[in-house]
Amino acid sequence: MQLWEATGSPLIPLLEFSEPHIMKKYGVNPDPETLDIVATASRQKEITVLMKIYWGDAREKLCESIDNIPLDCLIIGNRGLGKLKRVIMGSVSNYVVSNATCPVTVVKSHD
Image 1 (cartoon, rainbow, N blue to C red):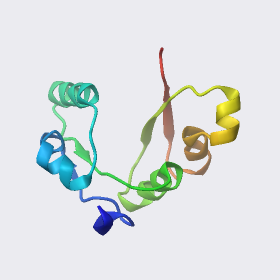
Image 2 (image 1 turned 60 degrees about the vertical axis):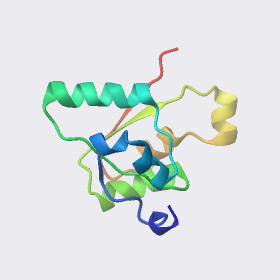
Image 3 (image 1 turned 90 degrees about the vertical axis):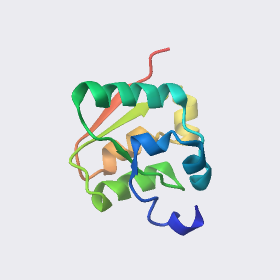
Image 4 (image 1 turned 180 degrees about the vertical axis):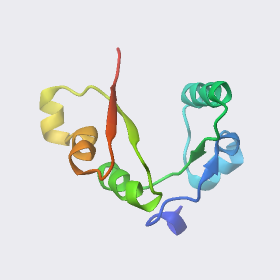
């Protein structure tokens, strides 16, 4: 993990991302439901999904990754924080929308 702290991990194929020994190597525990959704979409659309892990401030790392990978567009989620929490903690999605060098789509959480 410390090896890739500044640049993020190498690109990881979706199939490897769900293997426990690979995830232990990166020190993460991915959500099985999310991986299943992504795997289903990749099969249906016949696309190859590659993942990259970054450590640090999500706002800064997302904006850096847009130029480093490079990305044509970015789709991120929104946790739906209340106004007070958003003011105190800051909103990752608001920051990325304001500072990204590519188009950003924010998908709202549905509770």
